[in-house]
Length: 78
Image 1 (cartoon, helix red, strand yellow):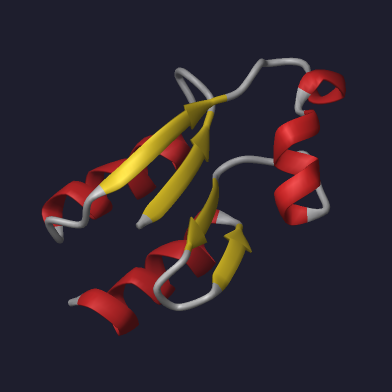
Image 2 (image 1 turned 30 degrees about the horizontal axis):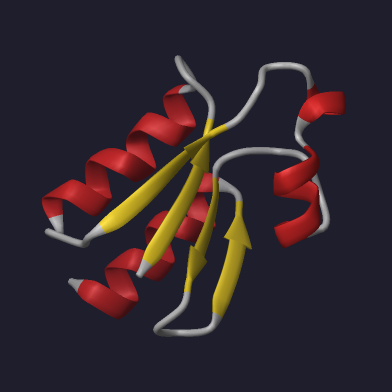
């Protein structure tokens, strides 16, 4: 299972969500609040407050930064 932490209207988050759908990967979205100070759950799982963040239980990966996530998805699932 993949969990995607994302913010409504974030183009980087949308790019990751689009790629997850293109690759037909089941994932759960966790919508975060806009203010960084309120992103405690993201900080708890990834150590920082920026989105997007994915948690991929199958591969044991927690990752931030959309380009790194997209590269990981290509390498692992394409």
